[in-house]
Amino acid sequence: MMTTTKVLNFIDGQWLAPKSNEYLENFNPATGEVFSLLADSDHRDIDQAVEAAQKAFKSWSKTSPEDRSQKLYKLADLIEKNIDDFAKLESKDQGKPWYIAKQMDMARVIKSFRFFAGAILHSENECNVMDAESMNYVLRKPVGVAGLISPWNLPLYLLTWKIAPALAFGNTVVCKPSEFTSMTAAKFCELLAEAGIPNGVVNMIFGTGAKAGDALVKHPKVPLISFTGGSETGKKVIQSSAEHFKKLSLELGGKNPNIIFADCDYKKMLATTLRSSFLNQGEICLCGSRIYVEESLYEKFLQDFVREIKELKVGDPSQKDTFMGPLISAQHLEKVQSMINTARDEGGKILMGGGRPELAAQFSKGYFLEPTVIVGLAENSTCMQREIFGPVVTVSSFKTLDEVIEKANGVSYGLSASVWTSNLNTAQTVAKNLDVGTVWINSWMKRDLRVPFGGMKASGLGREGGRHSMDFYTEMVNVCLTTT
Ligand code: NDP
Image 1 (cartoon, rainbow, N blue to C red):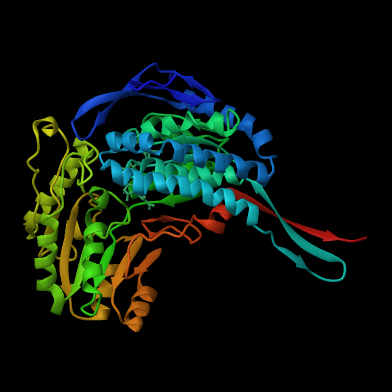
Image 2 (image 1 turned 135 degrees about the vertical axis):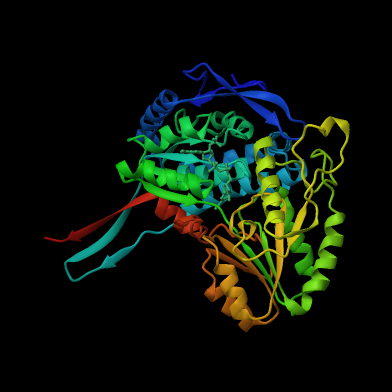
């Protein structure tokens, strides 16, 4: 059984201790205290889970779309029924304010299951009449046991963005959530039986990426890996999976430009830019961490931006008026702070933030950081080039369209961008010329689950969402049928 203090692996419908019989400490990032222990799994646990998933695949892959759809709808309903508990647990484990965990994370978890439960009832397959005798039709088969690996920033949100389509299209799964945020993944497993999902269809292995994650990526009986995480880890996943020619989807890091033209809807832009900079403590791959402002608006923007940031409350994640909680871990806080120090060394000015906010004694060991704004950095400086993944943005000015496009594209990443302008020509020109997977014009993080989601360059490989998820989670067989 899972308890609040010890999280065991979930394999074939059973809670099992890791073969190592060792556990990892899991910290509450707001207090720095250990609040649970996680199975420290290795290749032996992965082997057992893959075997269970292979066995379950034999029957799950033969179920009808209607059957799977009903079960996924039921699962969504059960999560919705327990939404407050899920949100509180996510908040405690990850650090984000609970109402953000509820309104952003859990709402999206539910939406993902409902979206794919509906999508499989409406998908169509290709059929092409070739000549008087022959026609081609496409059979779609589930791929098999899917290996799903997720990061700590949007824990259940990103894990279920993988689980929902994988199950909907008839695959079974072995999941490895981040060692920093495993609690809601464990809670999720408690609902599977009630939703009618058979044992072995979903298996959850806890532990580190180096041991459990790597074993999953290398496993010869896991033909598909969907991975979300950092770009350096993504490279390792490519290398480790190469031996077995796996299907890969990699959603990796970002260093996203937020491009602001003087003719934008200023009020909307300012409010959204606060969110795109600091929502979830800036720990969202889509956050606009490089802000480029047209020269004529630059000074006004900085003044207003800084004034608004001062109003953002950083602190207790259980309070409704808290906008930012702690960062995920002591190591990550240290990494983000060292990036701020590097920015100083490289000639940047810390316009605001950079330190620890003053908080009540119970949070004295929490991993909090003030929202931080840096100006005056060169384009090739470390903080303009590398992903920081925290509440830190750089702001610089630009004069021309060509200049800002070149700057926006001048990093190794290519995940997303926001463009703020009321001029359609400007918007279209920028969108066409940016090397990123998603461009938001006059908005940020508006997600339609039908659209292709993914990145270019070091931000990833492949696209997921709608029919792109169908392409990824199925194998196509073209049947050429000729009458005799
Ligand atoms: P990591 O790359 O460190 O980890 C991601 C997952 O991979 C974790 O579950 C981790 O395990 C696991 N892992 C680590 N090493 C290996 C390995 N060798 N083989 C297999 N799995 C491994 O990323 P973070 O968790 O730090 O997440 C932050 C990163 O994720 C940022 O770069 C962010 O931009 C990116 N991201 C991208 C998104 C996108 O859609 N493009 C969305 C959200 C985040 P463990 O942590 O347990 O050790």
